[in-house]
Image 1 (cartoon, rainbow, N blue to C red):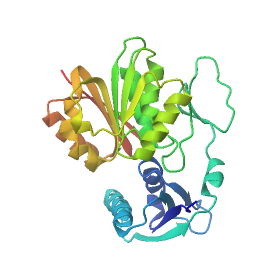
Image 2 (image 1 turned 90 degrees about the vertical axis):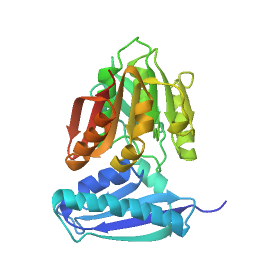
Image 3 (image 1 turned 180 degrees about the vertical axis):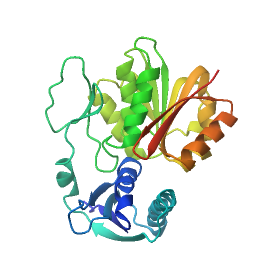
Image 4 (image 1 turned 60 degrees about the vertical axis):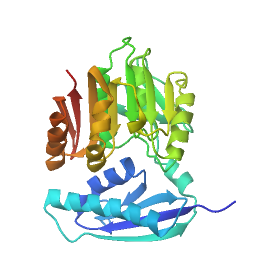
Length: 299
């Protein structure tokens, strides 16, 4: 069997960048990360590990370009300069086994727990639990943007109303699955442009007994000809802006759009400008650390 490869990206900069950069690498890029604590050597250095099937220059340049672009935004946000990015290709090692040690059951929002398939978890009375095997490439749901998105989804998805949910950029499928647990009569379409993510989301839907209510597809959001009660997209600012027309077009009468993957500050302000200009009304903003999520409504 051909060995897998890992792209190791090392960012050296002001320690203030470490936490938000780790959040971005894990939650958005689906990377495994390591960084030193305050009192450890190497504090401020972030190592990110991404599994790559294709180690071509185009693939590597794409990943590095995304990381550099976000790093520049973070430095501007915190008024810092001087961070550097280095990378190398590593042969397969036992990353998966080591990484699993750090994925244990956790409560992402009150009453909602994400648990790995390889560790037993005893559900408490009234608790909602999603069991999943995300694989290192797709993240575990720890990212603040996932927390923010799930909180807003729970507020707008009422039990028993049978809402139609569209999750764009689904990754592991956790947001769509959360919506289906919040409303046992809801249905969801989960989209992603990564075939591995689609496979992971389908498997997770099956593991949680949701496959009959959750369709997972590679279809581009622009190809859809239906509208939905709740559209959610937890991606990154620039992609959300590029997809604005398609995302707004998917929101049916009286429906809502929940967006996350947005930095507090100029990114948040711009998202509000772009989407209100397209006829939606901002009804709530939720923030955690340096991240924000916005809920818009269509009249």
